Amino acid sequence: MSDVTEPLLSIRDLSVAFHQGGKTTLAVDSVSFDIQRGEVLALVGESGSGKSVTANSILKLLPYPAASHPGGSILFKGQDLMRATDADLRRVRGNDITMIFQEPMTSLNPLHTIEKQIAEILALHGEVSVKTARARVLELLNQVGIREPEKRLAAYPHELSGGQRQRVMIAMALANRPELLIADEPTTALDVTVQAQILKLLKDLQVQHGMSMLFITHDLGIVRKFADRVCVMTGGKIVESGPVVEIFDNPRHAYTRHLLTSEPKGTPPARDAAKPVVLEATDVKVWFPIKAGFMRRVVDYVKAVDGIDMRLRAGHTLGVVGESGSGKTTLGLALTRLIASKGRIAFVGKDIQDYRFARMKPLRARMQVVFQDPFGSLSPRMPIADIIAEGLAIHESGLSATERDRRVAQALEEVGLDPATRWRFPHEFSGGQRQRVAIARAMVLKPKFVMLDEPTSALDMSVQAQVVDLLRDLQRRHDLAYLFISHDLKVVRALANDMIVMRLGKVMEQGPADEIFDAPQHAYTQALMAAAFNLEAVTSSVIRE
Image 1 (cartoon, rainbow, N blue to C red):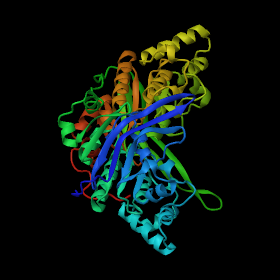
Image 2: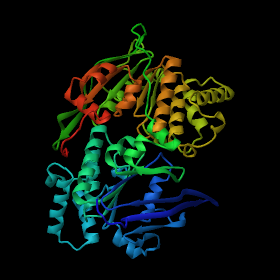
Image 3: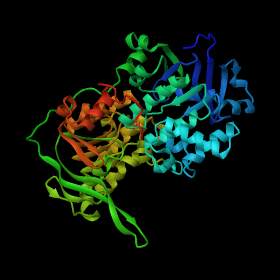
Image 4: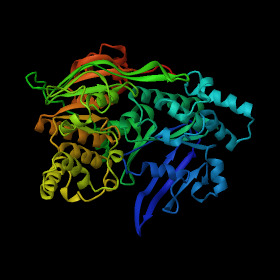
């Protein structure tokens, strides 16, 4: 680290207020911290703590005039960015300070090729010829570990995987060799092995270029091996800060201790072979045809699910794990007859493989789904009372309005929400509360089987733990059978009796969850475990995609 005493970035008493409908909310309250040259500072806290608002303030990316700064200063190399002109800020943005956002698909332009988007950064902040720009783009793509970068120049964002898109975002951020890189939750939406690769890549590049980095996350597990110092935020304030080792070994503030212990814990209910089989499948296949030529003939298939067997008993959880594109969700959709498949599928003893819409409708009440993103799966135009009651109106149409309302209130109480809030809309709830609403919508119909598709991946660590406890409690009370789809092995370990490890549509490993976690046999499973539980280094060098 440099001996220069003056920090690269110095934030003093920064406050951020939002004004809406005559009401003012203080999102950041008198925050102060420094980032030294060549240092990685982690800003840690749960959703709503003020992390991203603080980071966006540095480059003045907040929605002004709805946002304002009641006080504070942001000094970058001695220049106060709070009082900088637009022209001064344009020179700093993309040149001296760059930013990587959480979801690359929303940050990249879907209409432009990868080459055009990276070259645009070079053109905006320096005069470069087309030939020079292409050479620099190839150099950057190679540097961030994109395999065969020449073939990726003409690709559009939707043609890349999540990990590849994030690598492109990193390439764009590094294009003009910045002194400070702000990484806002850059790995939250990624699979565990891809997350490990991206973290290693960022650390390698940070050391190689001597950059400073502001790393924003809600996952303290990442911070331990990645950052030099850490600031812990909650309620818009920094409640604790210091060297990473000191914070982890001797946390002083109750909120820091809460974050450090906020991991899904516990074990699933004991396996019971006497329980009835709720769902069984044999040789399930979902193949999507690839058509080509003038006559659009089928030339091949994408084998999203390729010959999978499973059995799930009442009161048990089958965990389905694997990276994005492994076929996890496609398998779940096939088992619930939401997409066509081949093979045998039996639900509570009935062979439902050939059931179409009309024959499946009576079974839908007993076969429910909870999706990954509750904000996307709940109608923004309906109060949650109507959202939860919708299934009752379809499957139990004989109920009176009073009885329906009673059932809705009961379902909300069961998932830990106040029934008095049932006339609010989804946007008035936190992410964890919205997921509880989605679970209540499924539970109100008293199902026997629930497919849970990544229900905790969009949630903070402590909220994940709460939802896992809730799911375990509901399972115990109602003898529910769960199909739990996830790439988060820590959550799966806390819930699953049995497990299927999938890759490219096939089963890599299958059996009792505790046996697979304790002694994984397949190399792919071992790599997943290593990435999730830090059993060993996942990559000794950058893994190319």
